[in-house]
Image (cartoon, rainbow, N blue to C red; front, side, top):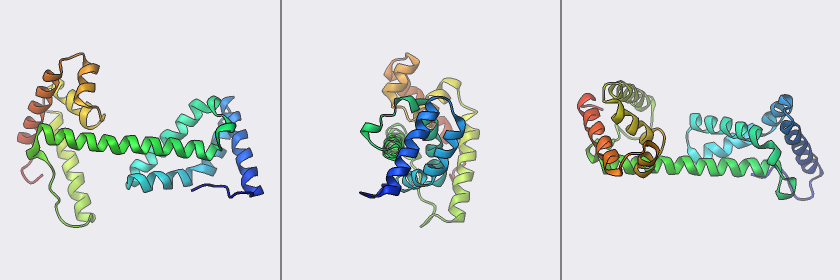
Length: 198
């Protein structure tokens, strides 16, 4: 995982160069950002992919991390570790957040509408399984467009925003019971609108 080996002069040179690039980024140097991206995007993407198991999500996370590095370049402290270690820590933390968000979504769906839990269409993921998931996603988006706006908003915050019911209630300044009922009613309406085979 580390880009540097102990007592590796090339690794030390690379670390110094990356620290210089981050310092230039803090001054708004976009070319420095491009150079750092060229050096670190591969290993950071690999780390994200190993943790998330999804290529698209790993790409999104890697892009998000570089945007964060750009915005926070001025806060980098070489005394606390290499640029690569700093970036890898950001990737790990963000990947863990996304994994927890997935778990919260599944738990919320199980609590609100247990009968909507997905059942696997077959064994290992294959092209037919992928096509089935794409068809399901399209149907869900279409059904979401047909339900009441307040129910749609609560469901989107829960399932796509990764917020808990308590967080949704706080964000919308609504009682927790209202949010729970709204999500439950919305999920039941979605169930009615979705084809039975999904």
